[in-house]
Length: 321
Figure 1 (cartoon, rainbow, N blue to C red):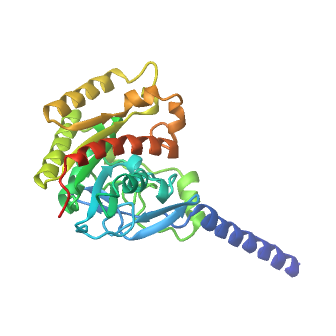
Figure 2 (tube, helix red, strand yellow; figure 1 turned 60 degrees about the vertical axis):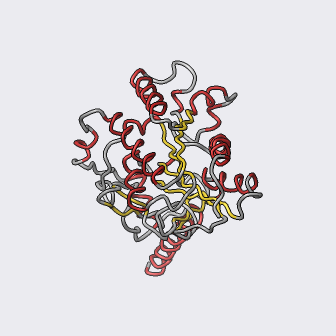
Figure 3 (spheres, rainbow, N blue to C red; figure 1 turned 90 degrees about the vertical axis):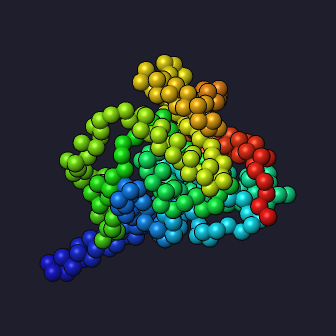
């Protein structure tokens, strides 16, 4: 009887170990990305961390960017672009480091501009669910890293984004502030256990006032800071999947889109609205990972369009000496 119990216990322990190792090595569970709260920005990816999720490599540098370590001041012969954005720019767990929009742009720009620049960097300052006010606060806190061009990549939902907050950090399963003790614990917490609501979030989600106007003001401030540092500014917006085709954007989105379009004309902001080009694509659904985020094909499409605009802008920017 004792031998049977020992055998059963050994089998259970062995299965536990195999499952734990499998979850870690194959899927990256047990080593999620960690977030930190910030009074102005709301939250950031904790600096200097890396992981693999479902086989995709994710690296966060010392400035909470998705990317490799950088020097604060670029080399005189370098082209530096700063990409600000949310999960679309970041790429999330479903995108390998090499396939983010920033990395795709960097490789292509290196080929397109090699006669003018010895080095090309596209920095990626982004985090899930950031809106224009988060991105503005990041820029105010960290500067533009002497980038020749700052690109703000938003999606339609960002026009209605609420004020920055650190409330989700450590309380929402998607914004962990510490590593779980086991991969199995993370799987339980992420996929099985019920997410505990954050009561204070209700007031934030019901933020009063002209939210679209507030976010347009934040975009205007990003543009102003960019120009004050003698950099160029490019704004781009991707659509939600349901906006493509018929019936198209909802009435409140049409109004917000028109306000953004009018704003960019008044402020003389170079603006790319991806909705028409996505509508012209023969298979727009094939650009999406889900209802809002892009897959590799979508990242390639967006990076190519942004690159064309960047090359036009760079023709007007004097080379660094």
